[in-house]
Image (cartoon, rainbow, N blue to C red; front, top):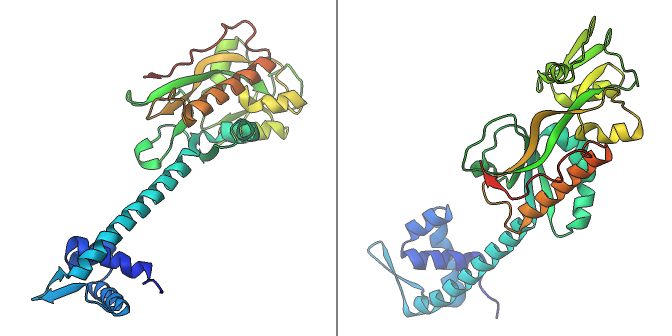
Length: 304
């Protein structure tokens, strides 16, 4: 025996639940006529009346009540199965919002190592900086530099401190007469470094770029000297494409993970948090930046 179409059974189930073709049409986002046609086709295929129609009202017949008992159970089980599958899919995907420069220059090249360590968890990357609307965006975690204020209801966990310094494609420990590369997204980078380092730069020229990563790319292309973040130029310093003749120093800021839910719950947030913290510290250790530092940043997340 050939079963009726699933769509017709769904229309019937909603009509039987609401006892109204009109309300069923509203629930299904179709016309009243579409519901009526599907029910009529179902009745014709079964050879029985499922509804008694009186004075523009409908009432389930004994056959209709019997069928509804079955369809109701089937669709409840189907809905539950779909929800479980969707939840499993969501549990296997971590949606991470990350500042574009650190995403492009540091995180993405290292994500294969994360996937190798956590083969059952995929990272969906969203490039963005500053405040994040977790409620509307569906973001699980945000990797940010702590240069802005976030709501006290968010959980925050430190990742590592920020280290900065001038970089160029030439190993020239001389700033006088150089072209200094600035960016609109970190407008105080040069003034901060000059103040903290005690260095001076005289008779310089200036080039401005919209984004931080553009100024770094310009330094890599030999256009001048840019202030860089240690993580973002780790690979270029390691392979000799860039040089940091003055070294790197802490500027007082840090990278943090923000979340609307606790990060130390043993789930995907904590797995990524543990990995990215260890990965960032490994990079800074390779650059000999943490040798004289206290052993570790505090790992338990807190509400700011």
